[in-house]
Length: 132
Image (cartoon, rainbow, N blue to C red; front, side, top):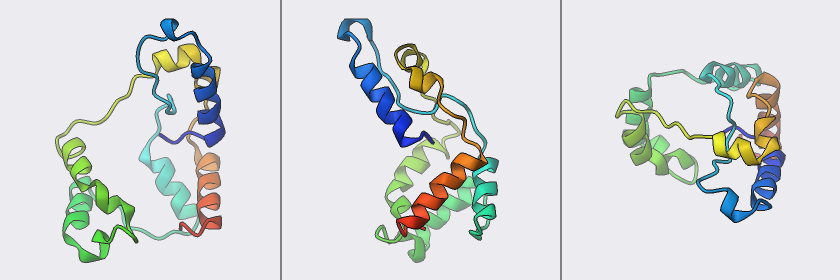
């Protein structure tokens, strides 16, 4: 989650080059540092994207019932409504262990935190690709 592509690529190479018997387990190629949604909201606002923050339940309800949000060609999140139901509405979040990954990957260990300047890089790239 929220990991620069070059960091992920380096981590895959680092972990893949390890002796297979020494890496017993699953390596999650994710940012091991926690972040808050406020970082994302603030970056979106700074970039000039207008949106309304709503409770998760309302967000999922809109995804499931509002025809404007159900077109997967326009809104890829529409394909994830069952996932959102199972994860967020159940009251359980998703936590992926990164200790094994950090053991074999200096890139993951040194992964930059998601902060406004990294989020702005994502937004600029997505804009250049006409994704936003």
